[in-house]
Image 1 (cartoon, rainbow, N blue to C red):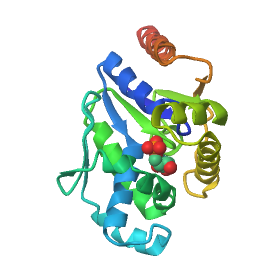
Image 2: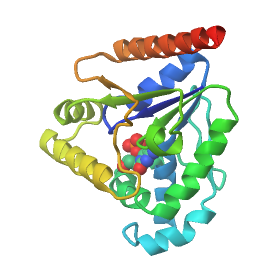
Image 3: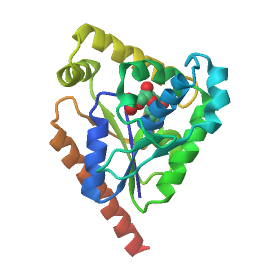
Length: 225
Ligand code: DC
């Protein structure tokens, strides 16, 4: 069973996906962390993230290893832990450009499919999981929240100025949803969950309910076939 979790940043998607995986006893894959790690590799290679041809040229050789245990975050480049580095402002500012390069997406999507194949059950989180990476995922969730709520949450967590944060979020949403290659969009068969007015535990309970209901329906169908 694959649970595809998509949606823009700031919806609480990562925390919720990780906790959902723990509740389900499933693996967990944070594909945003993979694009972020690729961005660290680009920056450390001295390549301008906006130079798509130069980024594409090193895509095949990114020495990335990512863990799938929801209880332990593990992102490594050449064996070195980059878990903190991938969350820096420098990387956040450059990741949209790197993740828009088609060759980067081809390489990372292959790695995502390999990682999922090693699990019976896995929660995979990103932007294009239900549309491109696993279009046949058993369960697809699209998490949303208004840009204002997301900006307020971000300022509450990491500080900073509300207006700048809101502008950053809107710019990144626009860039991620209008890029020609795998734009952020809700899959037609995804269930949309708006988290604007829900606490984190309420969101997780709702998702567990959706998974249980869906898996129950699949079991029932199987026994009747
Ligand atoms: O979820 P996040 O903020 O860590 O993602 C970082 C960036 O990676 C974000 O700008 C969008 C991009 N991304 C993507 O293009 N495709 C994915 N499946 C996951 C993330």
